[in-house]
Length: 430
View 1 (tube, one colour):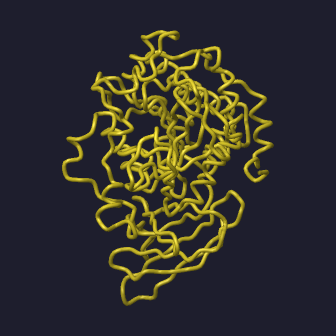
View 2 (view 1 turned 135 degrees about the horizontal axis):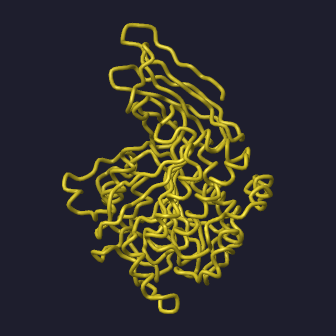
View 3 (view 1 turned 90 degrees about the vertical axis):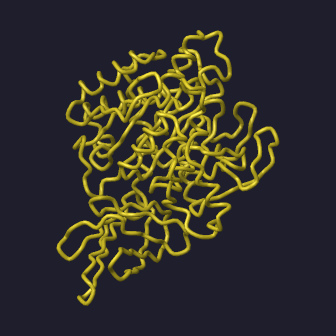
């Protein structure tokens, strides 16, 4: 398992510093102050923005880290963390506040690892997707937290059962063996989702996210798609129905990166459950419909996993520091996984980016598309691949590329020429 423990030097570096955010539970106003404090401490590499409001009008704030905050740089991938989707599952919220302060402090002290991370990656951190539910849970007090109290939003809706059900379209419309990417939304989707869900869908449609995790509680395991099986079941049945994506091996590697960098997730035995390597395919655990994880994979270019981080959904404040120490390296190491595979530019003969170009990998029936500036990102395991780029009005171009074990992505770019002219492709090593 040494491969999953590769960032040893990074771990030693992380052990040297403690984050300045207090190990306390942060109510909404306190959370907002903590975010703005980080922004004021690192103004040149951070930006705060809101993607919308909750049912009760609370902002859904995001803290961005980048060497050019507010700007998408070509060939720089976009990463996101989302916490507190279930209002009563609060550890993720506190960990993301700690992570924000940690990245800022490490940048200020000159950490080569963090400086490189912020130079090469645009990181978006949303500590709370469900601030209304959190307030309900927090109002119960630490000794009276019900298992479900505050889980839903202010309208009583579970936000992780509220995204358009693209799995059903894939499973039952004849598409199970066909395309399973960028599935269009139903015409009436906006009337079927909550304000928080709507804000997130519009958010992930506005940024070309590549890798993501959403943070939950109630178990300790790294869960990867698909969450929904064709044979819908409930958790209590405990029957195995592994439902892999075309990127199953890649998702397993991403999940193991987190579990083996975590203090004890990889051991498998946690909270009365056992998961080999501390990871699980979602549907093999229990089937979940209309979840955010599968939606990301089926609607966008983003690969998302779900991190269950604590047996106690609302752990006492005395446990927060221990949990931060257990998750700190894993949170950073998982972000670094965004720099594997291939990336590149798709342009025309005048060097204008072509958006919406399709990047296909032979043998993996899941495509990604280029963003507004013509850049694309395709996460891949080490290996040799046949890659095809296609764009409307141009002839497809195919090359063979080898992805090595090093972290740096292979840059594979195409220049499309108008029909009748010479066509060419460029293969460059980062």
